[in-house]
Image (cartoon, rainbow, N blue to C red; front, side, top):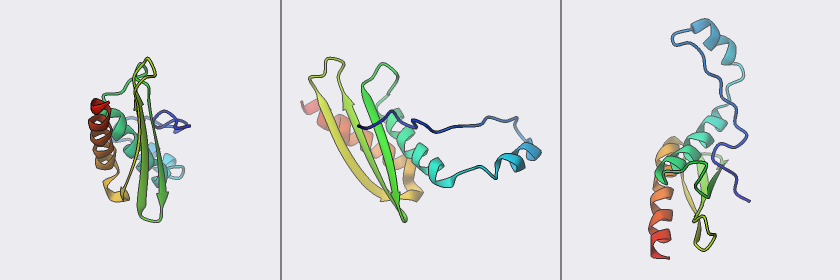
Amino acid sequence: MIPAPAQGALALEIRENDSHMEEIISHIKDETTEIQVAAERGFLAGVNGSCHVPMGAYCEINDDKLILTGIYGDEEGKKLVVKSIEGSVKDSSKIGFDLAEEVLKEYNKL
């Protein structure tokens, strides 16, 4: 099962330019999670996703390689595309958009 993008990720919002709070939360910041969320949310944005769109994304990281899997379908359950893409962790958001583009191309052919 491919979850919703960024499912289970927690985010903290702080005041702008609050260096004291930035220092406090820097100890719980997880760089891997940030990369995964950027890729998954890139896919979400690329397919113009919302809570009303049947879609999901899951990102894995192995060394410096990012593997993103996306799923996209219609509300009736008649059309469904599942696809994966690999790339560098440095391009996480772009990889999400690239996967969305590939998935939508395939979806529109169904």
